Length: 157
Image (cartoon, rainbow, N blue to C red; front, side, top):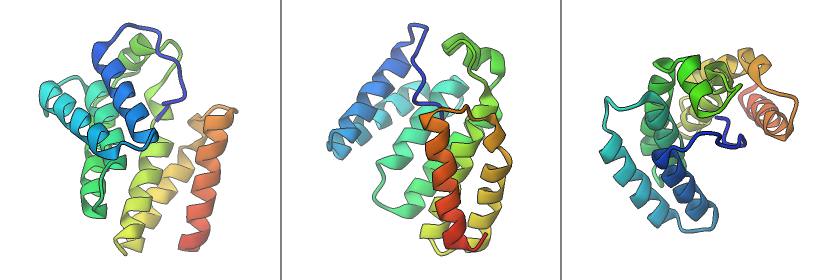
């Protein structure tokens, strides 16, 4: 996901998600998970797709169990599938849903690999590879492309 992009609209849910991510990056995984779970409960299973995608994407990163991480990453992908470019552009001008897919599929590929389900991992990695063209020529895009390549080498692709 394009977490490298600066938010251009005031959205308290996205701001709170960003705060939780900062806690996680700062080493407080438990508090980050707690706050993201609270946000998830507020947004709900049928809430705003951008909120669900973002929260689930980051919630996956706070999980200890690879199966739980997979479940959250699947929620993020499902939410992305119901997103529109208009909704994403309203959050950040110029952002498009297609730019979310390389990271989402990469995460799923990594999850399946951790679980020893390499055929499913390869399928999602191929989806990630096929969507890399949506990424910009910047450090975020470079990082995703490098991670896709590294996982591809592990999976023999």
